[in-house]
Image (tube, rainbow over all chains, first blue to last red; front, top):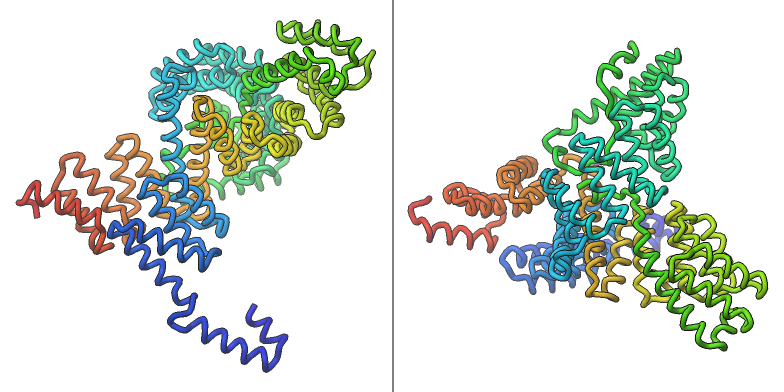
Length: 332
Length: 296
């Protein structure tokens, strides 16, 4: 900006720009004060002087509203003071200025989790025996990996809200996760009867059928799920996989291609695309898809596994018997 | 955490039931007063038919109600209220396409009325037509800023559009309007959780090797009481960025809670090496030294 000013204003521009630069570099200029204010604010924060940290962070944010660091510091001090909602707002200000600010995202994650805890506490206080309270407990058990307790709580919730599609689908998901497919099918079916447009139950039922090896029937549900959420790659990929396992490699290809277009990082879709193309005799495309799948696999293995273990995953993907996949693996 | 993801579970029944109840009471109220009926476009001679429709709707006799309202339309001409009622009937029957047709007519006839927009937005949501749902619900929330249902449905529309922060705003607005509603507390809580999960995904997307990823995992395990895993991930974070404040302090606190004073003191000292004046670390160190003076 300064360069453009110099170029367009000639000698006058150069002199003015020089003055501006000197002013910006002067010890008491706002630019020079910026790191000082943050440093002083951080020092106040670490010595436990939260009002002092808040004051300095607010001063920084008022002087340099476009810089995220002042907002982040303000939020941290607010969090330390227990002012979670103001901290949430401050972090949003930080991310409005810089959506890629890692510290802003990190603290927003923490403060959001704390705020969620507060809301759930309110729920348990206001209505400890409500369906939502049981649902919340069930979700907590799911988070802890305790499926049987989760099922108990979901069933208690369902007894209070027998027409809740949400609870039925959640219950079905847990039953599916522990391979109790008959129960899962029953709950998904009930949910679909109540709301045929519910994506979770339609896709979930497709998954159960797929895992049972009923590839033909699963296609119907994956197709419906894809229609219900046309912007999502996963049901398209699942449909492609179901078609492939039903012996319709040619039919699987367009579905898998559309899944890879929607989500170019969906490795499983590329792997299946390679297999389907290979079976259909489209060798060049098979090779290309396999290369992409291999590159994605390499990328995944580069990212340290320890980091991603436990990080919430994307919605469940279909998995099929490995022999079926291996049998159709294309040659390099 | 599967339930935290945007699974597009459109649990509209409860909301629609509430909306229907609100509309039915509005209809019933209008049925007691001829001028209001005239204003809402129902000619006086058709009031008995209209009321028959309302009663049938209240009783869940949707086909009877439908036929009554269609008769009112046929004999009395277009009416926003009647189209709204028909829209409600079709929603209750799960026929959202037909509901949309009728609710759009209602909105055209009464563009300043929020309830048909809320219902229309709900049906658009059920049909997965998210941008249209958002437009209607934003307009409804502007027209009726004190209607929690408008905010609630708008929150859902934003969530479906993956605009999680705006979704939180709307859940907050609804919750502020009805603070004693446990349903809203649950929904707002879930919405915050979704934001929390989203931030972690964003960090991984933007900077997959950031120590903040390890730190977040550590915080999560710590909140779950899984101290061993929490310590493991704090250690990863510390190795990843040895200058990152607060990590050794957290480790010190965990060790202290596990009765491991020696390890706790070591971690407190490591924290103080990074942030010399760290009040919490100093206090922890003092406490540890006071409790076990022999620990060095």
